[in-house]
Length: 298
Image 1: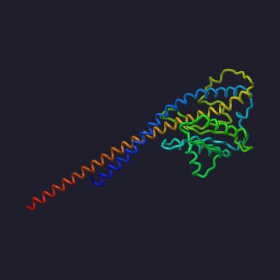
Image 2: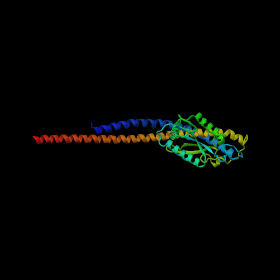
Image 3: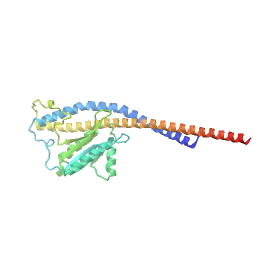
């Protein structure tokens, strides 16, 4: 075996080893994304229902509640950035970080200081690499989020908002995450959680708000009870949407890598065969030349 042929064979074996890894990761992501999608499906109805309830109270009452009232001259805004813990998921985390940077610029231009809350090691690495500070971070479960973490994030964000910027808190709370649409489509979303944007076109249709409502107890007490649950449910649903999106993106990226590995293996196999054929042709040519030289000598 010639040196060139040996090199192509070694490259082919190396790509085959990589292919086994990418194929295994593709299958793992495919198996996990099914459960992740089920969790999104199970939690979305509750999130929509509590959104309608909060919207109804805020829309059909004169309650002046701090969680639904925009503050004059807001100075600080918290931004929860939801990324992944691991890579090999295409542009999943990069898209979220890019959108969060656009939001950061927008808020800064409006005269607000941005207070980052990070979810996922990719966001942490992004901020640490640039020497930026952040208020809090959570990692270790981006593809399998747990409710306690979502509750902790929501309670911290709510507490910071209730303090307000004058007491070291924030005046607005935003979240940047990836919404799961389908296995081939995931969309980066930016939602202002607080103050509450009452009517959200994607989730609350006009028909949901047409009936007249009577509130027991008062609208203010109803909002006091509903809004904390609303914030927790929105954060929890966002984390589940992001997990399903991450796994779908990883499955797609690993399938693409596996397909590329197949093409590389075919290419290296063809080149190795061509090198082998060239070596055989050269050997035959040398034998024929030697035989001709012997015949001439006689």
